[in-house]
Amino acid sequence: MFGLTTEEVKVTQEARSYLKAQLSEGMAGIRFMILTGKGCGGNEYDIKPVMKEEVSEDDEVLEVENGLTLYIPKKDVLRFFGVDIDYIMDSLGSRRISISNPNETARCGCGESVSF
Image 1 (cartoon, helix red, strand yellow):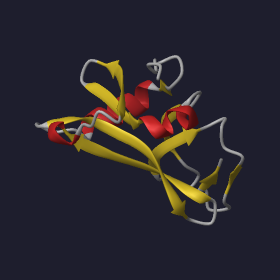
Image 2: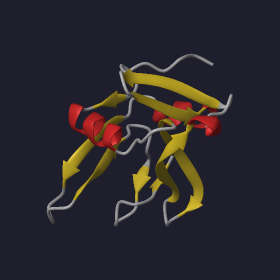
Image 3: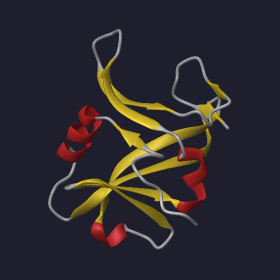
Image 4: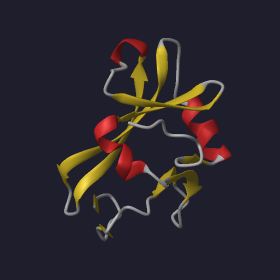
C-alpha cells in the first residue's frame, strides 16, 4: 500500500481548523471511513475523532498539518484518492463538512449516501 499525501486528499484551511477543534486530549486525530450498506446510495461517509488507543495497523495515516492527523482504513484508501474535504455553509445557513469525491458514481437526492 502506498502512503497518501495532502496532494491526493486535499483538506481546506477551513476544514483543518474545524477538524482540529473537534480534538481533545488523548485523541490521535480524525478517522474518515466509508460505511457500506447505508442509505439509498449504499455507502455513507463516517467522520469521527479517534483516540490514540483506537489507531489500528489497518489505518493509513495522513499528517495534514501539525495537530491534525487523518486515519483512513486501508480498505477505503482508493475510494478517498482525489478527495477534497471542505467546511462550508450550505444554502440553509448550516455549517458542515463537505466531501467532493471524484470516485463517486452517484449521490442520493439528500446527499447523505453515495455509490462507487
